[in-house]
Amino acid sequence: MELSNNERCMLKAMRNEPERVWDLSSLLESCGWNDQAHVAGAGGSLAEAGFVNQTENRSKIWRLATEGKAAAENGLLEQRIWDWLSQQEEQVGMKDLQASGIVEKREAGAGIGLLKDLGIQLERGQFVIPSATGAIDATLEMRAQFITQLATSEGIGIVESELDISQIDYFSSRKGIITSSEEVVRTWVLTPQGIAVGEHDLQEHLSIADITPELLQGEEWRTADFKPYDVTRSAPTPQVGKSHPMQALIERIRAIFLEMGFTEIDGDYVTTAGWNMDALFIPQDHPAREMQDTFYLDNPKSIPLPSERTQQWADVHEHGGATGSRGWGGDFSAEISEKGMLRTHTTVNTVSHLEQNPDKPCRVFSIGRVFRKESIDRTHLPEFHQIEGIIMEPGASLPMLVTTLKEFYTKMGYPEVRVRPAYFPYTEPSMEVEVKWRGEWLELGGAGIFRPEVTEPMGVKWPVCAWGMGLERLAMLVLGLDDIRQLYISDLEWLGNQPVL
Ligand code: PHE
Picture 1 (cartoon, protein in one colour):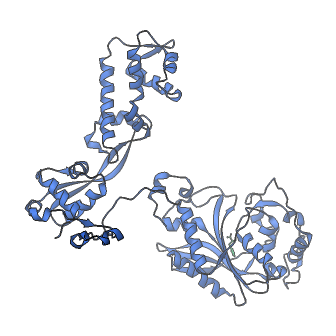
Picture 2 (spheres, protein in one colour):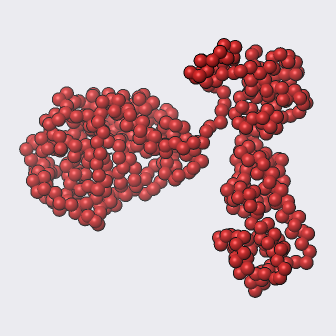
Picture 3 (cartoon, helix red, strand yellow):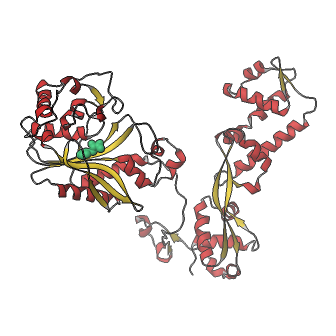
């Protein structure tokens, strides 16, 4: 087997001490590397080739946390105060300490507590130092050593078994000094085959990883090695800035609809009950309109609507207007229409688009936030997003709607889609859209053909396919979550580990 330069370098280093059990930091040092990925890569392929034995153990690794790093630079808080105290010739107190500038205001309280633990009392504001201070110095010395030990391993961290467990216990009870994580720790030992590799095979060659114009202008590349890529090798996950998974998902959905020939539309969070509900032929006594489900606004409590518009809705709701429907009956109230509220679905966006463009066939979508008075639990949030869309054109039909939704979910990676009969006041027929996920059918949204009571008063001549789906529900599938709240708690560790969507 042809070795890579890194493998050669690692093998050479190990052959200097053929019996040794090597760990990450000793190899980094002996090879003169500062990138752990070199050791992981070379070690993995040397092990595969049988030149080294690689052992993997899950271990607890300790590192300095924010306060710990500060302590490594400036000394521990108690150390700083103690050094200062030891230099004072007269008895000093809290006020002197504050005036000395060696501690920050926020540290003073904690500092006093730490001194007390060391046996230094504060009596009537004055520090009382015990006659023998050897024990204090010894304790502080041990703490400082521990911090220094961790500081020198920065980045890699130290396996718990190599640390003083009493210091771990002690510092774990203080905030922000040390932190731990469970990690796979590898060690490497030479095998007889590794020892037997000939010197000649260990000569390092120029190895080319990037082909650049400059490189090709020279001659060196003719005799160089070209580094092959192995995309199956394990590599560290770079912790870099990236979009929030929700934002990334929104971008992806947007790209899919744009690719499918849709145009994006938008709308305001604040709307009227008229546009959110009356225009959609939702009866004014519908339970979803109640205060406990909808956020009505105090300001603006009401938003004036043109009387021709509310009259039109009144006609349709009371007796069907000119649509041939019988309407809901009862008395329609224009005052209810004008109530200000936060939109409960983005169907207001598509309906408003139709109202503005009744005679222009369209395929539009919107991705936006909606608001409902829901109690927060594993699957509910009072603010969430919907993916909404319509197709309005002469041949728009139910099969077209189903095909469009199937195409969308297939592009998202969920090719198994089914629809089931459902009910919405504004569509006929109406359906629920479900996708198969881990063997189960999950409901992701509603869809249907807008009823004439919705479209005809606005002058829309053609059928309108419409749908509205939950974005967070879809995010739960994509990200494999069983709690919707995870999306919004800004858990940095979780966010850092999310795939780039
Ligand atoms: N607005 C419905 C909801 O919020 C979804 C829907 C949109 C249903 C369009 C049919 C047509 O659940």
